[in-house]
Length: 206
Image 1: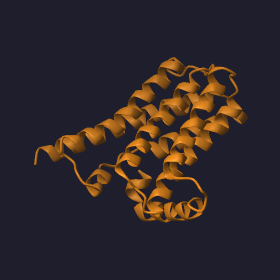
Image 2: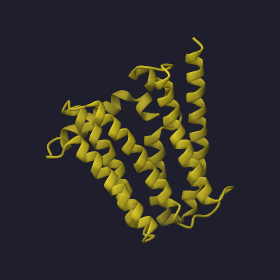
Image 3: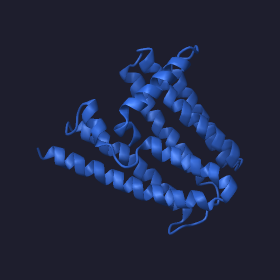
Image 4: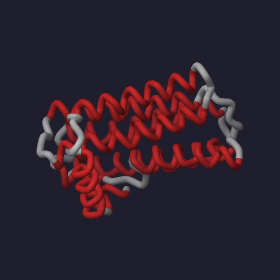
C-alpha cells in the first residue's frame, strides 16, 4: 500500500539507497544472492538451532538487502528483465523462509494452530503476488501504472515488515504478540487478495 499510495516518497528513498550502495563493488544480482543467502542462514538458525534472536537479525538483514538490489539497479541504470525476474523470485523465497522459519517455534495458538496460521499466511502472501501476476499474464491489467493501481490493503513490504517487527517486540512482551499479528495479517492479506481479484474482474469486463 505504501508503494502504491506514496510512489514519490518511495522513489526518493530508493534514490538515496541506490546512491549509497552503488558505491560498493557489488552488482544488483550479487545483492539479490546475498539476500537469499542471509534468508537461508536465518532459516537454518530457526530450524536447527531454534535461535530466534539470530534468525531475526538475519531475516531483517535479508529483507533490507532485498530492497537494495533493485534500488542499485535502477540508480545505476543496470536494470534487466533477467535481473528483475531473479529479484522477484528471490523476494518470494525470502518471505517464505521467514514464515516457515517461524513454524519451528512454539507459538501460542489463537483461533488456529500457530503452524497452520503461518501456512495460511504464506498461502495468502503468495496469492497477493499471483493475482497481480496472472492479471498481467492474461493482459487484463497491463503496464506499470495499471499494475501499481491494483494496490491492496497489505502489500509485501508492509506484510513482512509488520511480521518481523512483531518478532522483535515478542522478546519483551512474549510470543503471543507474533500469534496475534499473524492472525491479523491473515485477515488483511485475504482482503488484499479479494481487492485485487475484484479489480481484475472489473477491468476484464470492460
